[in-house]
Length: 172
Image (cartoon, rainbow, N blue to C red; front, side):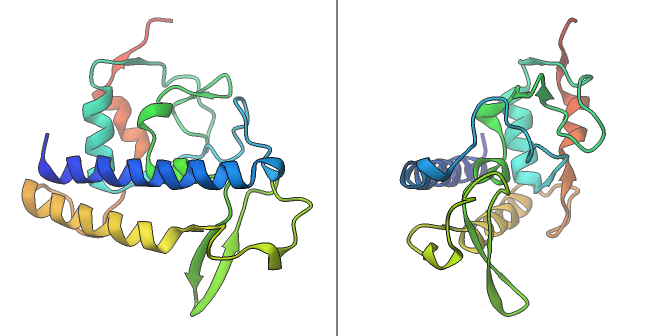
């Protein structure tokens, strides 16, 4: 395993720790539970995440035939088949996300969550700082690309659907 992927896994662990804290803090406002898949879309990821998932899933049989257009290929019967290895974007869904857009801070949260929560109750202390972690992920990806001398560019994103070409098919 490359040094960059090890650092990516450490970043993913930091994200998990913060998201667990925020989920606990906001538990009475969160509708997320097993079977809720409103946010499970067909995402593109940085090469470092793609390679980390490819490595983690290489011996895992996964059914990628069940997804519908626009949904993640790993969603089956409303459950993520790769939950432990999902990318960072999937780890933050449902939580209130704070990010910069057109020179102003914006807040995003799942439409099923925080239905009785006023926007002014969100603070930097109770929201996920998306830009901070996206910047760290971008820099780790840049180091990974330099380390691996791969065929990907610095700003390239890879559709998660391409992972199915590297996985063991699951017997139906």
